[in-house]
Every structure is written in C-alpha cells, then in structure tokens.
Image (cartoon, rainbow, N blue to C red; front, side):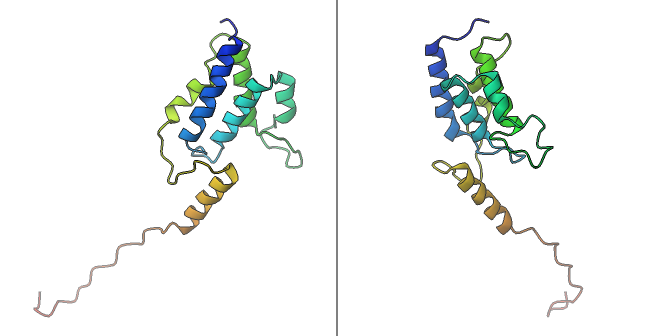
Length: 148
C-alpha cells in the first residue's frame, strides 16, 4: 500500500474528530476509547515516530506499578496502528475504519462535551446508585378474607 498523502491524513484527522463524540467514551472493560482516538489524532497531527510512541507507552501492560507513562499499552497500540497506516504498511486500515462499528452505540448517559474524567465519574456514580433486584417475596400461605 502506498502511504497516504497529506490531504488524506488531514481528512483522516477530521474524520476521527467527527467520530469521537459519536462513540461511547469507554469500552465494556473500562478502557478509554476517547484516549485511543486522541492518541491516533496526535500521532497523525504531530508526526510522532515509533520511538515517540514507545517513550509514552507502558509496554509492560501495567506490570510495573512504579513506572509512569502517559499512555497505557492499549492507547499506545492505537497510536502505533495510526503510524502504520500513515507509513503505508500493507493490510492496515485507516484508524477511523476501526471506530465505525461503535457509532450509535448508546452509553447510559450522554457524555458529549464531557472530559474523560467527568464521564468516568458519571459512570461510577451511576453504578454506585444502581439498585440490584431483590429476591421475590415468598408467597403467603394465608387465606384472604373470603377463604380463598
């Protein structure tokens, strides 16, 4: 595959920015979709190199609790995939193609306009308030006034 032109890269950045508010802020596992998209955008806009991405990414998937990285392993992987597309690697789809399937997936709340911290706080607050269904009450063996 031939590397995309700067016009195509700019179009991809625009598409990623358009898609971001249309998808849920987090995956079902609590990982941030929005952080991944931000990393893809930054990789394309700022011409990040593989070394730049590696320096920001926790390559050990959080195994070292004392290490501090700007990006989680998953976020770094998204940035690396954007770099591979930009470099024209064979078989790598545009970053926005991977997000299309999440457009229209509705979270419980509208997170548009919220930062990831605010959206996360909303999710945690809702989970804390969620009432678990109780066991059905046992049927009474008492007869009603009519003897039934």
